Image (tube, rainbow, N blue to C red):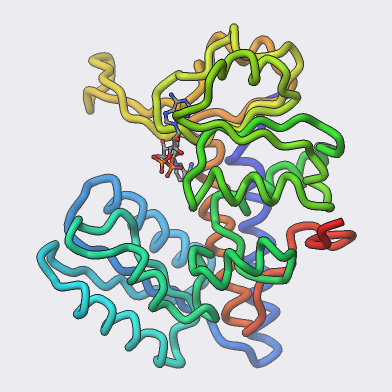
Length: 304
Ligand code: NAD
């Protein structure tokens, strides 16, 4: 069993990004500039946005954090997004989700200029991804593809079971893993909350990507020996041995599943770090005024 090490891979990719920023500026380009919008003070959202801003500093990007009270109106927020769209100094815009219930996340995401959609959630970005055209890939699926690429894991012909159908992880992941590219070329089964006999399906998987949001939901009896396990889940559970009284666990029962499989991502220090890499690579591409290439050059993006 080999750990797919988010610290190692993200460190490597961040070095590449830093060098790329230096080269781009030496050639007369600008510093990439990410604008992040945070509405309200959800602690998890604060932590995610804080980490993104910190990474901008580390990689030589500019960042602007716009914070708003949770009772702002949808129209006000869309106005702010439009202001950022027309600000030439800003390359990428991210709106930290979830938004308060009275604001439509779809309406706000739709307001972001596709040229600055570095989270890859805009319908135009997702549509281009579906068609295999160069675009900003959603950050978490992009990060997972970068991880698989780094370890040169050949997924061609594998049965890949994806658990979860959200617009930001599960659904885009099914498209990326099934397209004619490497990583990709897998036979994909998407499972979700209404799937019957989940265990029977996961037992046939060469690769499981779990994006459920339930702690340790994927147990050893659901995994075929030798499978590859990608754990996207981030769940906070009580742990009185920790000073904070809690700790993070994934959607996979790591301790019991890890000995069975060929590769596995830990939580933390796995997919979460790769998500940041996806976002930062998208922002750099936005600064260069060109969307990210499909992950793999070769056949990347061509649906055959
Ligand atoms: P979501 O709540 O939008 O989607 C969860 C999905 O799980 C749904 O599609 C649902 O159908 C499915 N599901 C729920 N219960 C199920 C069950 N019993 N059996 C099968 N499927 C079931 O969540 P999301 O935004 O996709 O996030 C999923 C998890 O990944 C969360 O823990 C989230 O915090 C984490 N996440 C991590 C990163 C990262 O960078 N590591 C990024 C995004 C999300």
